[in-house]
Amino acid sequence: MIERLCIIGIGLIGGSVALAARAQGLCREIVAADREEEALRQAEKRGIIDRGYRDIGKAAEEADAVVIATPVGRMAAVFEALKPVWSPRAFYTDVGSTKASVVQAVESVFGRVPENFVPAHPISGRELSGVAAALPDLFAGKKVILTPLPHTDVHVLERVRAFWQGLGAEVHDMSVAHHDHVLAATSHLPHVIAYCLTHLLGRKDEKDEIFQYAAGGFRDFSRIAGSCPVMWADICLANRDEILKLLRQFEGELQRFDELLSRGDRQAIHDYFAEARAARQRFLDRHS
Ligand SMILES: NC(=O)c1ccc[n+]([C@@H]2O[C@H](COP(=O)([O-])OP(=O)(O)OC[C@H]3O[C@@H](n4cnc5c(N)ncnc54)[C@H](O)[C@@H]3O)[C@@H](O)[C@H]2O)c1
Ligand SMILES: O=C(O)C(=O)C[C@]1(C(=O)O)C=C[C@@H](O)C=C1
Image (cartoon, rainbow, N blue to C red):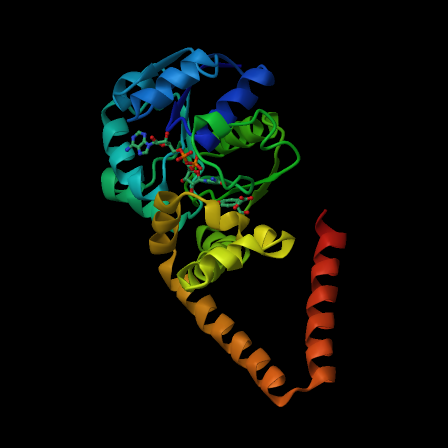
């Protein structure tokens, strides 16, 4: 049992961790640090946390489990604030959507990744942000990827694994580089494409009419373009090289389809769509 769980950044993900930890009885007390007073007050009012602090050091001292849930671009500053109160008895983990940048941030502050920090990424979220959108079952049955380093303390790794499992997640381990390679394709590229398409339509003169007649297709496709720009600017910059490689491949794919359509090749267009549909179905059969 965790005595004091500390969440740094009590937004959608930090709030959901707190709600799930409380619901599953994983800890006696939950405190949080956030730079937004309003987020802390809201979290206290809803009973998501017991106490909130503006000061990260004050919130984290005495905690035996610390979860960092700020946007990835803020993590170096968070590690800086944690350094004076870093405890060898506690475990530390994060929820950042990119992992190499988080490892670099911790290295820039400590010189090396402390043995009791286990980078993590819950593959579960929403296009909404802030503590008001937090859900107690956000991680239930969802995957969490841990990217331990070769010198990560094995006992801490098992405590962090048990913590995420306790929140209801299925935990997988991966290397930092592999994580960023895979997530660039499955999460980062789709978000970039959704933002780009929404931009394209939004810029058109007849935009009112375009949005007026947009039904399920556009709504489904653009849902993730409703995601937080701060978080996504951080993710894109943090995983820039992997995303740029995929953007080049995606441009090639658009070019391929452009050629089929320009030729008016019905059979080739049909086969192109049929292959994509079958690939999606295989993915759903295997993973849902
Ligand atoms: N939203 C998702 O679907 C999702 C899913 C998995 C992982 N993540 C990752 O989780 C993290 C948080 O995302 P979110 O969606 O919960 O964002 P959010 O905006 O809902 O919450 C972030 C919170 O961090 C606080 N914060 C920002 N900078 C801070 C600082 N320097 N010190 C203290 N508090 C600070 C903000 O005030 C906010 O309350 C990000 O790293 C994101 O990449 C998000
Ligand atoms: O469902 C959504 O809204 C999400 O975008 C969740 C999503 C994803 O791309 O799958 C977004 C970012 C995270 O790092 C993990 C999950």
